[in-house]
Length: 276
Image (cartoon, rainbow, N blue to C red; front, side, top):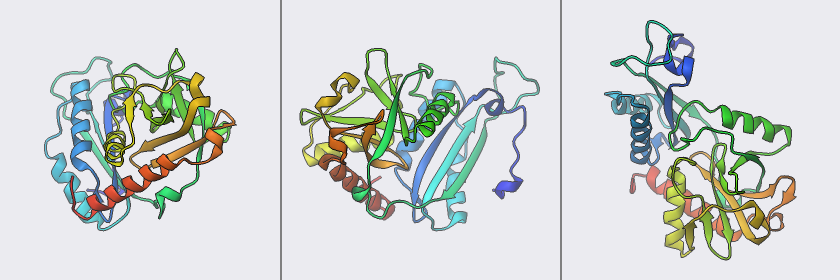
């Protein structure tokens, strides 16, 4: 463990040169990483997708870093690259030692997530690569979408497929309520298998809120009762404006608030040592 100012990574590291790297971000409450097992399982899947070896000892390093950081609320960023090689070349050599980078960061979360206001979003054609299920650090598509959102005074970009199907946000998964059921894009290479997305589906079932894995369509926006995004640090947040126009009257919906409250309760339980 080093102070951030003393951390050094080789300029020949493949993560720096090619984005040949994957990552996870865990939410931390009172020094405890939430849903750690699910995040590490997804990290393992991303590493396997890139044929990068699992970095032995990383779980102990995570535990040691969190112990040194003490009790804090915020995030823990975990990045693993293929490692550094003697020369720059596209095709990686075998047997390279992975580089790992762990970064704790403090941040504030809403005291009452269920009372949070709505977000504004824009839609853009999905110009990203076709393996969004792998959580790679190569996030140029999300960066470009975020720049567009910032220029338009919006909080998030929502990526849309060629048939008008909403896939996910630049850093969130997406749900729409239509016809008294929730719709979200099916798992597959077009979206990230969000840890929070899976929790929302589980919580919705527990609350008796029907949900199906079917992509919402922009052409059906007049039929939406609610639209919301979700993510590890985002929680559940209503989207009340899309492309400059109000969504479902411009108010955060009842199901969104119920799910935001349920997720916050599950997170508190996890932080206190409940179910993982």
